Image (tube, rainbow over all chains, first blue to last red; front, side):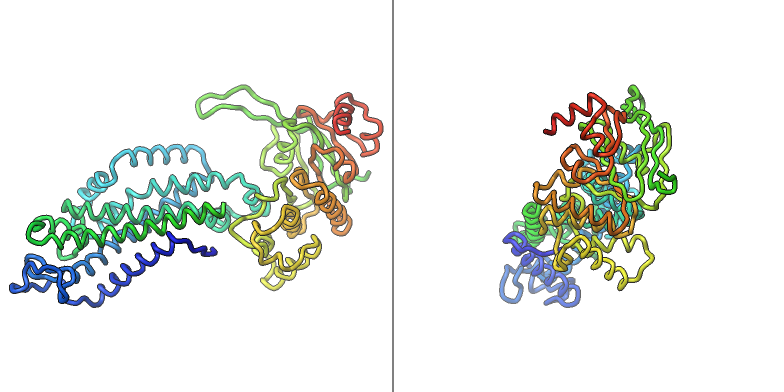
Amino acid sequence: MKQKMNGFFAAGLTITALLLLLTVVGAFWTPYDPNAMSGSEKFLAPCLAHPFGTDNFGRDILSRVMKGAGTTFTVAALTVLMGSVLGTLIGALTGYFGGIVDDLLMRLGDVLTAFPSVLLALVIISLLGPGSKYNVVLALGLVFIPSFARVTRTAFASARDVNYIKSARLMGASSARILLIHILPNTLNVLLPAITIGFNNAVLAEASMSYLGIGVTPPDASLGYMLSEAQGMFARAPWYALCTGAVIVLFVFGVGLIGEGLQRRSGEVD
Amino acid sequence: MERNDLVLSVSHVTSGYRDGGIFSKGPYQEVLHDVSFDVHHKEILGLVGESGTGKTTLARTILGIVKPDQGSVTHYTKRPQMIFQDPYSSLNPAYNIAWSLEEPLRIYGKYDAAERKRRVREMLQRVELPEECLTAMPHELSGGQRQRVSIAMALIQRPKFLIADEPVSALDVTIQAQILKLLKNLRDELDLSFLFISHDLNVVYQLCDRVLVMKQGRVVEQGTVEEIFNSPQQEYTKQLLRAAE
């Protein structure tokens, strides 16, 4: 696919790349041990030694944000991966073949999307048991399947009767080949923006679930969990909530800009 | 003509559909009624009639996409191919021309990469396109060039019989003439037979050997181009001819 840069795409890519760099570095090295407490350094406001300040135990917030962003990113990425792969598979099969299975699955998807996604994930978490970040991924991933299925179903259904797909069938191409090689690349202009939107929703959903205490729990730190911690000390250490919140916002903003850029680019091509 | 000279034989084909969903069936709508004709070796058979008369359903029935309710379709050649009207939707926009031309050979699966490339180049020459086209994306080509690529794609598995559904009606007149000449040349060089569906009688007159006139799902008249154009027997054929003047 030819990359045609535009302002949105470039800005989004820059922001996301910087945050990813911070996250990847955070996986191997942080300025301080994110869990090391220090009685003499409680509630320090942002300064040179602690750019994001410290919390009630004297832990360095930047270090904790770097680690927590890693968890948040992993959860969001795995959620979108699961939702998009399974959703695209279902969308491809139902869109291309149609029939009763199509009707049934799409109505089931309607029912699922009628519930708020966090509520539905909450139900699934209560079945799976809370705590592990992989349970959060499983719950959110399942919740995300219908939206991807719907987006791709439309694209696959409209490709079914296009001439180049008709000729591929006449030439004896297998259904798998038609779906994966002939149609899938043409759905990227709807799939990629859906992935960026899904990623953002996953970041926010993970944050809200951890904030409610049903998502990632200690010793894993995620940005959402940290926000809920920060809430309790907002009067003493507002920088905790603000810095953590700002990183979440930047993440969502950066990926959102990439999605916007992709959508505008596909608009230009069509 | 001899029977072994046939490439396609359509005999007493009746086809239709029922409207309606899962729970209710609407009345039976007949689209084709007792259609019979043959296509002979190296023949271009024109199929004319106004729109909605079942031409496209007939093409789909011949290709086996629609099963006839009665009658039979017999192919005497392998893998018939189709050339579509709209050259803008007949090439996959996600891939370049080289990929699209090679794909039918990859699907066929009998040739290695070098042989496939060789056949792609040979076919590109046959449809009179420059080699630069290979690396182009579909949207970078003109309508006439795209139609040439579509023809090359349809021919690269070496079929002997093709259905062309209004292949030039989306092109302007000078390009039309070039494509018609190309189809004639290909017919002569590669021993092809065509079913050429068109509503444009002038195009049919230039290209076809025989003509089939259809009205509301029935064949009302068939004969050589001279017979149909110089001494039409049916009132409907006369009307079509008058409308084309």
